[in-house]
Image (spheres, protein in one colour):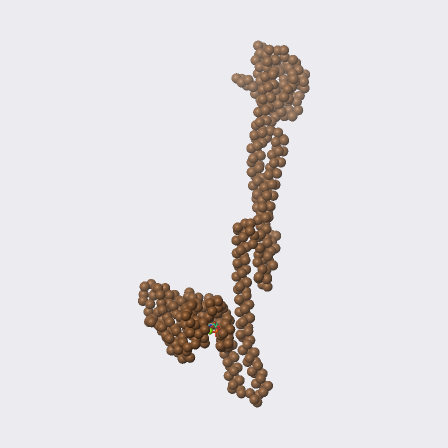
Length: 458
Ligand SMILES: Nc1ncnc2c1ncn2[C@@H]1O[C@H](COP(=O)(O)OP(=O)(O)OP(=O)(O)O)[C@@H](O)[C@H]1O
Ligand SMILES: [Mg+2]
């Protein structure tokens, strides 16, 4: 839904274009009318000159008729030295002179606007000429209608009409163009409005006409792709989490109900141990979920410079393994890490390796210029290339693992990778001749990177 209280982009652009077009038309119209006004004034002047040319020879050389032909002016009048009208156009015959002014001394003509001059209607420009006669200067008056600055009314009508037409055409053109250009935006908006949490597989239409619209639609679709992926992962995570929590609860409930039903035949210590194992599992899942939630929320980690080799050595010595452990820990290497969390990564990798190895596990630590690399490799069945990213997803347990050990929750590697990320490192599975090879890369201690020796003695 578009908000009625917000201005529409299309309406604003259309009105703005209309206003600009109207202003441009107004300026052009004024210039045009000034031009036509000048033309009309020149034409009036030439009509006056024509009348002058026609009448002056009659005054000078005669015969001067008392009634003069009007020609292309409104009125002509000849006044003698005694201010008697000796000749005039028909409507001025027998009337007093139409004007009393004459050209000032030293000039032969003068013009005035009279509204109206006697005997004529409307405002007239009356031009007075001195015509020198033996007895003195006679006056020739020629009257033409006053020419306004814009010339003729038809010119004004033409200018207004063309201006309105141009303004309307420009506004209509912009409106139509914007309507076409914005149509994909509206389509994207309408589609997005219909996409709900259950319809995340729908995508907005991708227009092909405008590059910007295409880029917008593609970006929206990319965002929807990511949203759909994240939503699917969240759904799977929720389903898996509830499944992993429900399974031990159901098992414990069955055990307790059985025990209550057959109280005498029940092996109470055995049943209690079984229920405690269920509680342990519940506790482990809940703790893992909490760890993941903290890692997801980017909770701060407390780093201290640590020698990874001795940390690995200590962890390997802490317990006994059912598989042979081969250590490759050439010397001290320093990392800034949260010891508890990195130990957690190591323990998970060792647990997994022990579960999947046939006979031996190789644990190695080394450093290059910028990072420390810890590897845990076993000689088990390995992990197929297509599963090497999948196993880092939450609650992922491959079929082989399910049959091998029902105890795991499938959160260990997800947690390990998040811990690696929290230390600006990576945890990946890389190719090996046999079995699975997990590679943890972490940045070297800052002091070590600055040219100090790799060892810390921590
Ligand atoms: N060394 C390995 N060799 C073969 N498969 C492995 C190996 N390590 C892990 N996997 C596979 O990856 C899956 C995920 O491992 P992850 O450590 O996340 O979960 P888990 O060990 O099953 O449970 P837990 O949460 O208790 O660690 C395992 O279930 C197994 O299928
Ligand atoms: Mg594990």
